[in-house]
Image 1 (tube, rainbow, N blue to C red):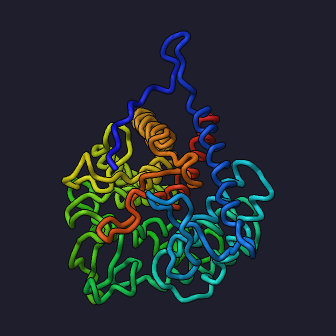
Image 2 (tube, rainbow, N blue to C red):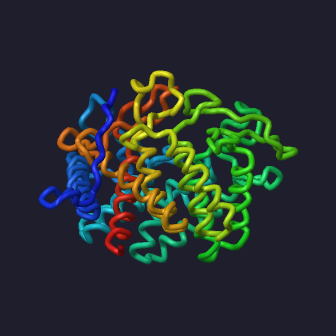
Image 3 (spheres, rainbow, N blue to C red):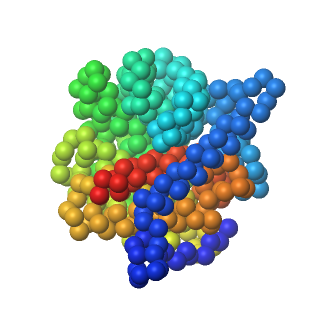
Length: 402
């Protein structure tokens, strides 16, 4: 679907008698919208003779559909942690005990992952988005243990010769070596957290090593990223760089760059090492330079069909959330630029052009999952909703605090 560029107006009062909403007002309105959509989804999930099946998680709503496509919470379903995470964020926003109860029930369906051998790298997405937010908001000690146990499981994918976590064990033969995808940067946060909460320094060291390997071998000279880097398991040298979900090996897949922005911002937060802050800014600036006027990227910035190519709202949500943190670490002028860009993204996402509204119970439309595989194209996708509500909560706190 082709989207016309949305004219973005200032959030400030331009003239007396002509005043746009203040950003925290718009963020608050958007959070109230998310709360309504969460309640719609919960009603949909409970609308069965046997009631709610807490092992079935919302995954996507196709462009032509109006109800959630559900998937069983298994080790193969990498998105299963996002819906519990959405519920925890909704609880954080509204302090609704009924939503907290639902968050607890959906979260409990993922406990098995803490004592299951690692299927792939997505354990951070699965457990830190669910149990991580749950522990942050409740302090439940059983949640903490699940996170620690799962971090140990994730650590089994670390290859010390390569210095990085293996992303897809099932694809080692396909790629001819130790494959690392950019998405894996998002799973380092769980290792950092575990290292600070009783898991041991070796988890911290693994996360740093993985970040360094990615920083040194996963990017082109202009700070745009490859989706996949492949390493020789015996020497640790990079032997290939390619795409899996992007347009081409040398193209800029939008969500991959978004994962990098978010991931290296977290690495700087956890290490305090200036090199990661410098790098986070460089990959951010490379991404921002490619954006269309409304701040919502095309799924791949090098798709020759642009401006008729699909957008990816999920990438915009990830970046808007990351910039809520990154802008606080950089000099004021740069921070204000990041703030302006992030609020532009959230404003666009919060218009009728991107909101699901009454059409569907999701938050957003127009995300792209895996276009080369023909999967989740121009769809509502649960991880877009997760990072959208996360971004709104982060910006609400920051804007209220001045």
